[in-house]
Amino acid sequence: MDAVRLGIVGVGGIGSAHFNCVGGGRIAEMKLGAVCDIDPKRLEYCRSVIGDIPCFGDYREMFKSGLIDAALISVPHPLHAKIAIEALGAGLNVLTEKPEDITVSAAERLNDAAKKSGLVFGIMFNQRTNPLFARARELVRAGEIGEIKRSVWIITNWYRTQHYYDTGGWRATWSGEGGGVLLNQAPHNLDLWQWICGMPSEITAFCDEGKWHNIEVEDDATIFARYPNGGTGVFITSTGDCPGTNCLEITGTRGTVIVEKGRLTLKRLAEDERELCFKSSESMPSARPEIEIFEPKEQETAHAGILQNFANAILHGEELLAPGYEGINQLMLTNAAYLSQWTKKPVSLPIDSGLYDRLLREKQEESESKHGGDKQTHKTYSERWQVRF
Image 1: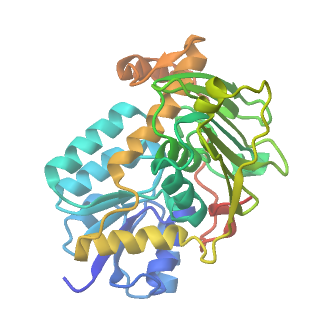
Image 2: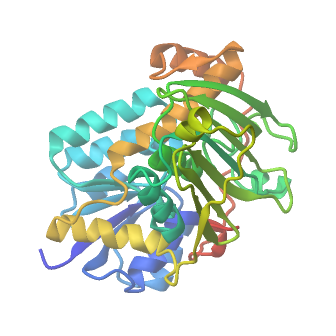
């Protein structure tokens, strides 16, 4: 194989951006093999850009066509695992859009299928390519700030208008999307939170449904997390704040990492705070941390970076930056937050996926599905899909 032939399932908003990226030759050793969408107008658009692109209305036909080596899944969230499992079963490598699906149980089924297949399985957690978050992970995992005591992420610059929610027939409903800001916008941040700080052992959350918009899912959420080592974390997100904030602060026993306004600040203590606390003869000693500022020279490669890494993994065995198996961690946090809201109590991780699925079905049965399809236009990559501070 000299180039990965990619088949895209779903060429709507983000799918059409991937189509234009790969079709435009931006990914080395990857080319478009075929596209699939149930909307004929989407396929007409693809033909208007690339006249001879093979088009399918049924993804199963594309999977068995012999025209592709890998499938990129960019359809509504509840279909991710189902279609990805079928792609793996057809012998295709898979890259799925985030989230991995809408439930932990669906992610478990997909992960099992991927492991059995032995094929390359990735997920589009494109914000992992941002040098600031990569540096934060490196510092934390190397013990540069000691043991984590607390993390706080205020990520409220996901502002959306009512028009945004009205443009997609599947959006902002329990039956169509399976959740709100925690499942649509904030999966990137929830993934980065656990990628950097690890997974908590318990979640307590408050997820306000339709607080700022006329929608049935949450558009404002606060998560309080407890970790096995006794540390805590707070995660606050919303699509109702304008202009909003993006600030991550991680405090450890030997210092603090702050990611804000496009730079990382490291405040490193000369000695561990736990030793200072119990050995100092002063009541309020003056701590003068060493301060380092990291402002990356390179830009995040975003979606194109994940696509290139996926191609390299298939052709050259390169390690995936965002393995698909890790998508279950973000879903575990999201599902736990919803469970906490629905049951009005803390939820231990891993969650009771059977209980979650039952309660979600109840929400879906009461869901007011919207008529009409997705009204989004075809797109190229834009800044709204990258990290904004």
